[in-house]
Amino acid sequence: MIKGALIDLGGVVFVGDAALPGAVDAVGRLKAAGLPVRYLSNTTRRAQRMLIDDLARMGLSVSPEELFLPAVAARAHLKAQGLKPHLLAQPALAEDLAGLAGDRGLAVVIGDAGEGFTYKALNAAFRALLNGADFIALAANRSFRDADGQLSLDAGAFVAALEYASGRSATVLGKPSPDFFASALASLGCAPEEAVMIGDDVESDVGGAMALGMAGILVRTGKYEPGAEDSIAPPPTAVVDDLSAAVDCVLTYSA
Amino acid sequence: MIKGALIDLGGVVFVGDAALPGAVDAVGRLKAAGLPVRYLSNTTRRAQRMLIDDLARMGLSVSPEELFLPAVAARAHLKAQGLKPHLLAQPALAEDLAGLAGDRGLAVVIGDAGEGFTYKALNAAFRALLNGADFIALAANRSFRDADGQLSLDAGAFVAALEYASGRSATVLGKPSPDFFASALASLGCAPEEAVMIGDDVESDVGGAMALGMAGILVRTGKYEPGAEDSIAPPPTAVVDDLSAAVDCVLTYSA
Image 1 (cartoon, rainbow over the protein chains, first blue to last red):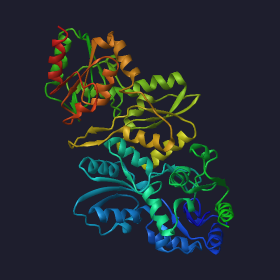
Image 2 (cartoon, rainbow over the protein chains, first blue to last red):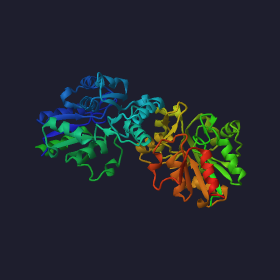
Image 3 (cartoon, chains in turn yellow, blue):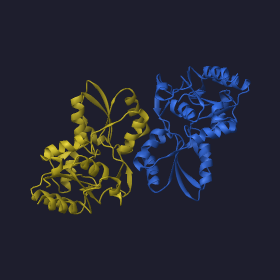
Image 4 (cartoon, helix red, strand yellow):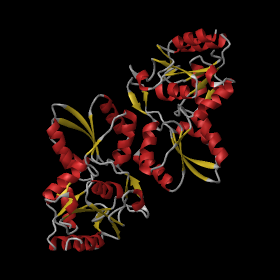
C-alpha cells in the first residue's frame, strides 16, 4: 500500500529547461489522489531558489520543504560539523552554501562543476584533501543526459578521480545515501515500505530506494538506456515509459 | 645475485629539469661495475626524443633502446591492434603516436595531460568510450612531486574518473604492468630475480617489480612521503636516501 511518492526531477520531470510531456499533469494526479509528494534530486547545477523558480516556469509549484537537494543537506551537515566549504561546483550553487565560516576546518565539497572541472581546480581540491580537509560529494552520479541528447560526465567521475588520487573516500550526501532518502521519507511521514521512488537513474534512484525497502520505479526518460534495469538486483519494482505511466502504476497500488 | 638494474627517471634521476645530486654519477658507477641499466619511466609529458635530449643536458647519455616509456609501448600496441589513438595527453607526446591510421577502430589513450584535462576533453574521451573505443592508460599514477614541491594529480586520477563513469577498465601500459617490466627485463637479458628496480613510487615501481619477483628499492626522493613503505606488503627490499645509496646497495649484492 503506497502512501507517498518521491520523484526525481532531472530526466523525469524535465530535461534541460523544459518539462517532459505529461509530467506536470502526472504530479497533479498524484496530489489529487491525496498522495503526498516530495522531490528528491541530485542536481547541483542550480541553487534551491533558482530550481524552484525554474519549476514554477514549467508550471510546477514546489515549496522549499518539498524539495530535497544535496546542497541543502550539505549546508546542514557543514553547519553541524563546524566546517567551511572548499566548493568545487557551479558558481550558481554557491548561495546555498554561503556564510558558513566553520571553526573546525575545511571540507572539500564536490558538485557538478561542468566546465569548472579544470585541472587547477581539481588539483586545489586534491591538495586540500592531502592537508586533511573533510571530503563531501554532493552526488556521485556517473553521467547525465546532456542538452545535445548524449550522455556527459557527471560529478561522480571527478569524485572518483579525487578518491583514487588521495586514497580517501567521499561521504556522498545525495542519492543513494540512506540519510538523504530518510529525511525525505520523514517529511512524507511514511515508512519506507509505504513509499515509492520514481527516477531515471537505476543506481542512485531505484537501487538506492529499494535498498531501504521502498518500491522503485524506473522511467524510460532522461538518462535511461535500454537494458539499464538489468544492472541492479533485485530488478526495479517496475519499468515504465515516463512519469505519467509511473503515476498510473502508483495509483493502482495506493487505491 | 643482481645482474641488471631498472631505474625510474622522474623523482629518482631528476626532478623538474634538474638532475638530483649524485644521480648521474651513481648510474656511472653501476655501468663501471659492468651492470647493464635500463630506464623504466611512466612519464608521458614529453616524447621519447625530447626526454633523451633533456637527459643529455643533465649529463646522462641514454639511447632509445635503453629507455622504456609508456608511449613507445602504446605505439607498438596500437600498431599491432590496428587502432588509431584518441589521445588525451600533453601535445608534446603526440609525435610518439603520430601516423597510426588504424583500420580496426579507435583507442582512447590517456597520459598526463596536465592543464589539458579539461571537462570538454574528458567528456569527449568518455563519449568515445561509450561508442566502443578501446581504453588505454599510459600510466595510472596517483600523483607526482610538482615543481612547487607539492604533490599534484597525475594521470591515474583521470583514468579513474573515466573508468567510473563508463564502467570500463583501462589497460595500463606503463608501470606496474607486468608486460612493461617484462620488455625491459628482456632487454637487460635478466630473469626477474636477477634484477632490481629503483624507484620513488612505492606502488608502481617497487610493488610492481616485486610482484614479478624482482628486488625493489624505494628511494626517499621525488614523490616519496614518510611511511610510504608501509603501504605495500611485502615491504620494499630496501628503503634508502637516494639513487646513490641505492646503487651502493645494489653493488653489494652484485659483487
